[in-house]
Image (tube, rainbow over all chains, first blue to last red; front, side, top):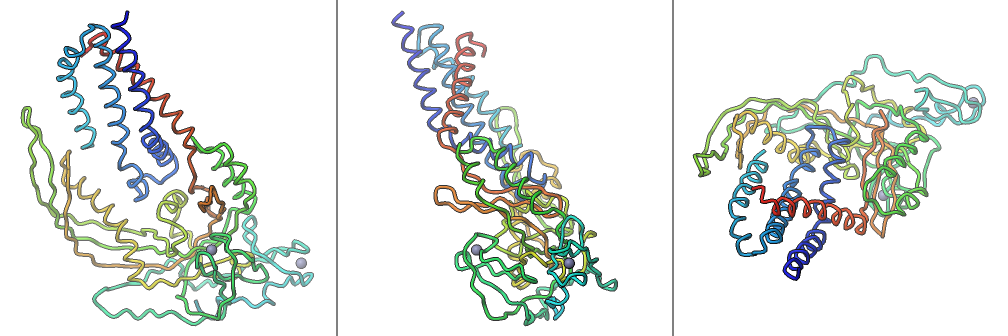
Length: 103
Length: 349
Ligand SMILES: [Zn+2]
Ligand SMILES: [Zn+2]
């Protein structure tokens, strides 16, 4: 039971950390929503507001990635193995982010 | 503006009751404030409000500002200079609500075309307050802060610019070879044109606000400049020389050019664009467009909400509530972390 406490505390800490830096990406998300609905598509203001949206994707991806490690740690009760196994997931994630950034 | 930019007080006098007339966006006529009689505004049938002027940066440009008889007022806060037609002199700046002081007659450039207001005060007021009420993550007291503010109508100077571009460009792009990503370079040539790019000729309306409110601008809707349309409204005259307008417009043009180059190159993962363009056939118009501006102050920061006088589209500046942003961020963090946790726990990948 005590072993299970580590991952739970870790995931709570992760949520606190992600939330504390999350105000900026959330603001960006709202600005993008506004741009999509209110700015003329293809106008300079539209392009300027849309640029930088990758911040949101990075924020989500990083939070998700650390949560997967903690989840696996909780399941197999072995942190170093969980970290070790996250390597290929990280590789896939970076590829997705790179493809998104190019778009 | 020519001498006709000033309308005689007598021309705004109602022939029915000798009251004062103002331009009415609802009817498109001069309407008497006392007896509501409508007086049709006659415009010069020979004027061509859509006419464009040529500009060659290599030749001396002959357009000169002209001395005008309309009394300008300058804002002590933002420096904006406005004129009023008829009796409708406001004590406050329509851009920022600062106090106005009268200035000696000055020089400004002739404005050929304009589009008069078709959205009235009440409609604009509703549109502006409605816009504010629909903001996500806005401070809870925002609506009550804004509710004390009223819109004021002003004709804002704008440019339209045309140009032809012959562009030599180089793009750096990424390609994936097996597991590796490599950079490649490609060059090309593209001919493209810009037609009627709208640029505010006043620092008070930003390009972002322009893109939020002027979706429906059509040069074919321009009418000859007619001071009667200004009766009851403020107006800012054209003060920028063409090269200054072009300098302002260059940032927008560069952004649009980069996007067109990316498309033209046909490459997917363009990282970097560099180009040299030969610009010819520059044409411009000086026009006035109608906007309603509502200004308010939130925590000491002046902000504005702008409603287009053509269709009522609204866009503006707004504050965010840091508490609401944090709450939304916490909610999103919980969702993402829970999703990731389950993913890892079931070792999906
Ligand atoms: Zn009358
Ligand atoms: Zn002002």
